[in-house]
Length: 405
Image 1 (tube, rainbow, N blue to C red):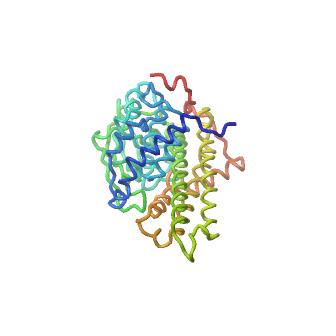
Image 2: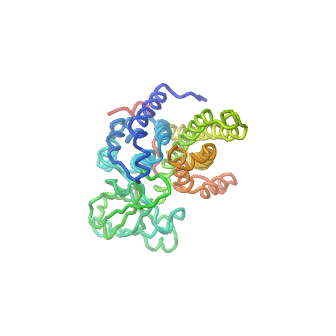
Image 3: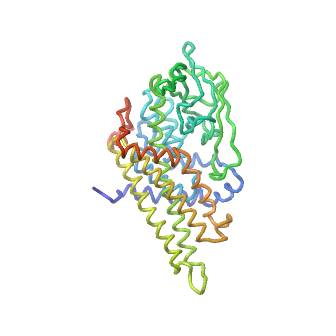
């Protein structure tokens, strides 16, 4: 077992860290204050190869492995959650899902431009009445000749207003919908600009204010039959496998947020003085900082293990769920402690920890709430849940074929 990152991984960490410090950090506080998303970050990320980081070169990607995806997410969220969300949605939920499930024709048409950063992809699963309860989806898709006609509403969709393409899920079998049989759900690749598709921004968010979040409305949207992803009835499996990649990026990002809280708290504790000494000399401050250090090390090991399993082509739903659950809870606890250490200053946006605290709360809700992951881990431990093989598995990382153009 090897616990050291490769030279390539270390170089990636350094490169993304410098990129985030240069292109994100100087502007993020004002963007957060004004609730504004800057789409100009997309070409900058594409130039760094981030938008196709773990996609093979033959599909327009950078040809790096899944651990690289996690490391990049950690470095980006160290500065702000909103930029990591781009990686989670565009790379994890959208592009990796196409890599796993799309036909060769679909990969050439949709994955290649996404990996190159020419288009942005989003993931449309959540609905007003369907979050954790996926089979309560109300969106439908009926077959008419060589098209499907999609109707429904999606909400809390990251990048909804800026994405070019959407991976959406809808019932294709209304009888199975009535019985809540998830084998009646299918997945579709939908393009912005098609008749009947509109998006709208969600305002008033507690956190991730520098990110774009919105809703998608579909009214008789004609989708070519060749844009069915996988087979009819595989939508639920596709969605759950996509979440394995999305949750992995969230876990890695939350690990970066823990480190950001730790570094900010250490700086402040060494500068701020009370009772004639730096507050870092007080044991209760030391206790909070010690817990942050502990949480960071555990969260990082958990997501790196999940990334290693992905590289081997081994199913990792349990391990990824555990990493996401732990890292997100740990990030929220660390952000809360960081605000406490900063005292009154932590309660205003003069210091970054106030933003970290607001951003961290979202992570214990999206990509599977804390409660959903607790239930998943209990079912695995009790033997109630065993993962069955999928028709299409996420391809294992191959350093030779991954870098073939």
